[in-house]
Image (cartoon, rainbow, N blue to C red):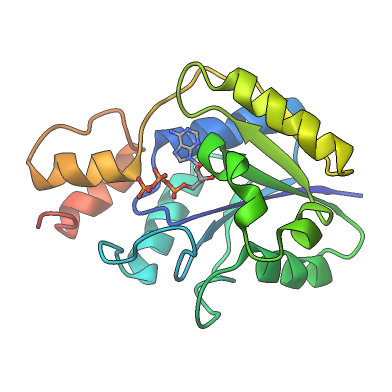
Length: 200
Ligand code: ATP
């Protein structure tokens, strides 16, 4: 039985906070594969500033190059309409019938997971891996984990060195011509510069 991690997001763009999160669980759980899954239309976000799926996919592929177990899936970009994680997990379950599926999420997504589309079914199909985005969130995560435990939902909380980076802040900095050095993998930054993305 392989351990497959699903890591979805807008990845607009993918940044070191995402990578830090995935790697901390990789160290802890020792996945066979970590699938980065850029969303088509996120149910959780305003899509007005969203770059094309093609660009976000390309940046995920560049970020994945540095990590042997990372791969990138266009499963959500190929599906019309909102990218519900429930639908993605159902599709991937068919592809990985005998393997254990994990879902990696940051604190904001973990704390709001009950409101997701078909949340109860989803949460019973995977093991959730959640960590803090900012300092001081750990207690809240543990509290949430205890509630989920009582519902029979499996989760793993990892105490990480938080990296409070967001795609929103990176987009703003790029728009304003500020440095984003160290916030993104250098290959991704090179791609953004070469394609003059997020400039206005
Ligand atoms: P935006 O600023 O555009 O809303 P974002 O930075 O939140 O984007 P997403 O692509 O929406 O990035 O996030 C995908 C997943 O990664 C979510 O589960 C989110 O909680 C998690 N995540 C994003 N940034 C971090 C971070 N700095 N540390 C830990 N987890 C993060």
